[in-house]
Length: 459
Image (cartoon, rainbow, N blue to C red; front, side, top):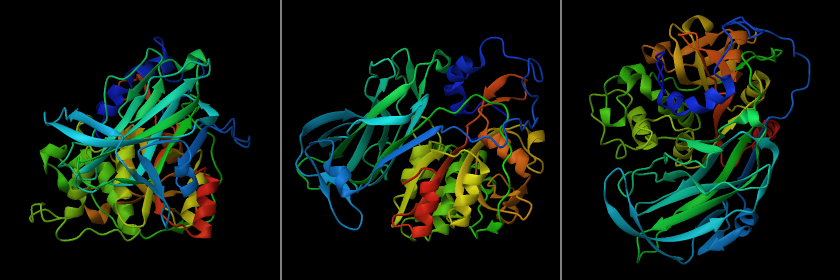
C-alpha cells in the first residue's frame, strides 16, 4: 500500500463501493451531523457492540472429508490437509501475465454451504498451502444472497508460492450487477439496498503437471464475512494492562527504487515489510539460497523476498491481503488469516497472548500525531500498548530500521483503523478499512493463544 495521500490501486478499485456508501451528495465535514475529520464522538461508548464479523475456516481432517471431492482426498497428521488423490481431468490455462498456455491436471474440492451468522456486505477469503514447483491452486467463492438467488463462482485468487509456473494474481472484471470482486474482496455493489450475502461455498481447484504425482497441500481455507456499519468515528475503548512484544523492525523506505518489477520498493512495500517482521517474530527464517537472487548491495534482503513472493501481477502490487497471509503460511509451523477486529480491546487480547497483528488504515497527516505523513492505505504492525493505553507500532513508513518503533495516541489510532468512512485531503468522502488486519500465528497455538484467537472470532 502507498503511504502517499494519493489514490492507491485498492482505493481506485473500491471507488464504486464507496460511492454507494457516500451517495452523490456527501455532507461537508461537520455538516448534517457528520463529524469533521479527527472528531472523536463517543456517544455509543458502553453499549455492547453488535456482531459484525463471521469467520469460518476448514482446517481439520473432518473438515476436509466433508464437502464434495472430485479427485481430492483428505490427509491426516499433525497438520491435516487436502491433496490431489487422482486427477479429475486436464485443463489448458493461459497465464495472462506471461502469455504462456500450459496443460494442467486438476482435482477439485467444494466446501459445504456455510450460512453466515452475520449476513455480509463484504467477504474476504484466506488460504494456507504448500505449492511445490509444478503445482498451483485456485480458490473460488459462490454466495447466496438474502433474496435466495446466487452469485456466480468468483475467482478470489490464483496462487503459487513461487513464480515460475504461473504468476499469482487476483482476477479483475468479475461481477453480476449486484456484487463485484475488488482485488481480494467480494463486495455488494449497493450495501444501502439491504441486500446481503447470506451464505457461501468455497471451491478449491488444485493443479499439477500432468504425469506427475506432485500435489499442493491445503491446510487452511476459509472466509471472513462482515457487515461493518458506516461510520466516521468509533466508540472509545478502555485501556487494558500494558505489554510490548519484541518484534524485528524493518523499514520499507530503505528499499526505495528497488525491484520496479515488484512495485519499486519504498512506500509500496508496507505490507510485505510488515509481514516479514511478524514472520521473523515467530521464528521464520529464509536461507542464504532463498535470498541468493537479491542484489547483495541491498540491506534486509528478506524484505525484498517478501515483496517478490506476495506480489499480485494483476493488482500490480504487494498489498493483496490474502496473498500476504498465504505467504506467511509458507514458513514452517505458521498459519495466517485476514479478518476484521472490532476494537483495540481485541488487539489487546491478542497482544496479551503474545500475538502481534498487522493492521490496515488510511488517514490525513494531522489525524495521527507523530506519523509525519498521510496515506490512502498503509499497513503497520501493532506490537503492544503503553501504560496509558497508547498503541506501540512497528511502522515501516520510517526512514530507517531504528526509527520503526512508534507510539501513537490511542484515540487517534483507534479511529483511523476502525472507521469505514473518512474525508481525504480534497475533502471528499473516501473509504476506511473498518478494522482489517492480518493475523499470523502458530499452526499449533498454545491454549492461551487459542483462547485469545477464539475471543476475536478466529479458530
